[in-house]
Amino acid sequence: MMKYGGTMTDPKELVKLSVQLVSHSLQLALKDAEPLKATTTEPMAKRALEICDIKINTAMGDLNRSVTEIDKFEPATGEKQIDNLKTWIEATLTFQEVCIDAFSNITGPDGHKMRMILQLSGMAACNSMAVIEGWTKLLEKTNPVPATFEFSSKARKLLQAQAQSEFPSWVDPAQRRLLAADPAGVPADMVVAQDGSGQYKSIMQAISAIPKKHKTPFVIKVKAGVYKEHVLIPKYADGIVMIGDGPTKTRVTGSKNFAAGVQTSDTATFGTISAPNFVARNMGFENTAGPEGHQAVAYRSRSDNSVLYNCAFDGYQDTLYAQAYRQFYRDCTITGTIDFVFGTATTVLQNCKLIVRKPLPNQACIVTAEGKKDPNGDSAIVLQGCHITSDPAYFPVRHTNKAYLGRPWKEYSTTIVMNSILDDLIAPEGWLPWVGDFGLNTLFYAEFENKGAGSAQGGRVTWKGIRKLTAAQVETFTPAKLYVEGDDWIRAANVPYVAGFMKA
Image (cartoon, rainbow, N blue to C red):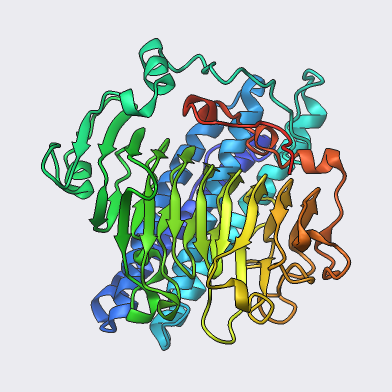
């Protein structure tokens, strides 16, 4: 038996206990995986074990900082702290699901055993999410707080909009001058150039040279060129600002894909590994595997408080993988066929263009596949002020190979499409099932004040999870309210940004 201190009459200690139980269950999963590493010979199974080892250790880090956050909890900053807790615990659940998915195609006793272990630890994470939600409701009842303050994620406060030129107090004057500058004039800490005019000829050479202890923001300029490499930003490389010469000029390209025997997470051309506050401007990310490669990710992110501006993400299936935490995309272009914006992050795509490409014969096209696993989580995909349209090659077949706004990857899939333009490629039904009736009663899908031929509501599916929301309800999915801990991190990136509603 494990021993835990504290009294169970203290709600805060109960929350801490629930988190510690998740940690304990993951420790058992790591222990049980050890003998499998020695006996497993199948390459995909061996890689699944390696992925799980990485993901579980990342989850353990989130659980440790969750315990620290609980210990220092203060009602005055409670909303932000609780939002952090929910984000981190939901991320641990996401990483466990990634492990389970990695083993989904692994037959035999090894795959079955690991799936069972991870399902048990996932139940512990869901229990912790429920305990945290109960704690927030108790705090709402017992703590006298200003009328503008709400603990509940379902009644979020609207932060006062600041001028575009303003920055939060924690950004020092030097950083403010840096972030406010034209990207062309920003001094770089490193320059990458294929022609030898910079310190490095490849992006990974530059990433590998970043000191473990570095200043933030740390600016890397990547000059125009096609960089055929797979980039992985490590956990210690926080606060990286990567600036290209334009999304069609500075391109990072790869072709790893699931059809070639690569796990989906490993197919990403460019990935961030839990390094927070990543900012990319004027960059292009591409996976050239084509529709025959099936899952083939161009960009995968689990960078908390990451901002991407004027970037291009090009692929077919699973182009943009917003895996975990809080992410914001502005003025970006994303191309793809199936589930080409997917993941379990709290993700806003604002003023972005989503271009549907021609799939294989008999394939439908699906824009989003959100993966919320727990009803108490905050993850969502929000398309705000976006334009969903057809690639020229897809246009002639758009009514044969129909396109849909999304489908439920996990039971509580949450997707909002608001203030956007939907061209006539969107099928009248609007949304597509995953398989059978999976998630149709528990998902949360809504459309609000969209325009275009594809926005007509007359033929839409009428599942229980399809919502008709009021303006006040939809407002909780605008960035300033969706990101409960605040939007300072978006403002600090000095990109165009609308905190509330936009016009379609």
